[in-house]
Length: 389
Picture 1 (cartoon, rainbow, N blue to C red):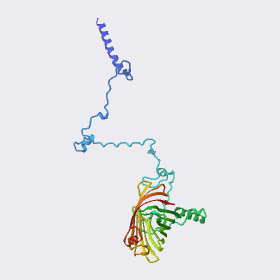
Picture 2 (tube, helix red, strand yellow):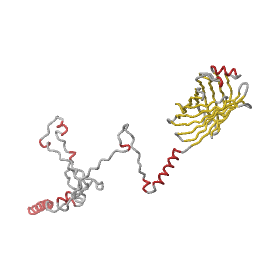
Picture 3 (spheres, rainbow, N blue to C red):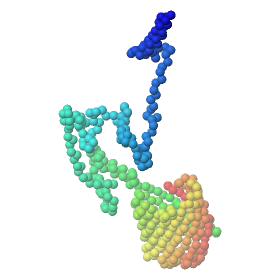
């Protein structure tokens, strides 16, 4: 009865001892067996989840706290970022990409300093830069001032290829075509029919000239007379005109009065040009062969209403230094002409017009006019055409 119980107890002890011994044997991992649960593993917390130091560096800098001994370790420097491949900034050890050293000295690209130190090559020494010879200032490099302008160059590159005589002749022709050409013009500023109170008359006034921009010969002509009657006045002038400024010409010459009788010859000196605001102005003095001094002032202005319609007010005043009974002219202001004309330019060379004009005699000239049966005050209408050739 006791023997069976003893055997049963030994069997139970062996059944518990064998599994424990099998689990402790090296090289055996029962966790990989199917159906065997894995033991729980310890979780490692990341650095960010570790407990923050008791005294952060930013608080220590402001003096709020003092860090512990283990918190006073210096921060490791941040690693330098490597240049990206292909960016052009990557330099392999032993390679020299520039032609100058860090201290600014010239470097031979065929023999970098690191190769020269190892005795692989001998760098070439670049030649010292030579100082350029000072160059004399010319043209716009000259200092501003009132010094005399430098002489123009006398050498022409074309003379090295072509004969100098031929090139000189061609340059002379070019200068003529560019500004030395002779021009010609003839015009009638007034060519009109005049409607008076008791009689009608005609009148013309114009000039012709030939020359260039600086020097010209000018021929002026004007006259008037009764319709179907004799010619009352005819005045011809030959003048030399010289440009003294961009807008003014100085004129000198001779004037000859064919009518009225007796005729007179005058020496003429005058000026003609454009006053400010584009007023055309003419002033002249006349000295006759009898010693009589006379003068005249004229002026007009073209006011454009449209590109075709143009209104021209005009004034003319005649003076005399002495009384000339045979010509019916008194001293002082002899007469005054005021008029306005409206023209339509069909083209520049042909422009018909209509207008009104008033002529007034003064002083002794008025007395001579009454004695001859004329009108001292003469308002009248005009119609005519302005011509240019």
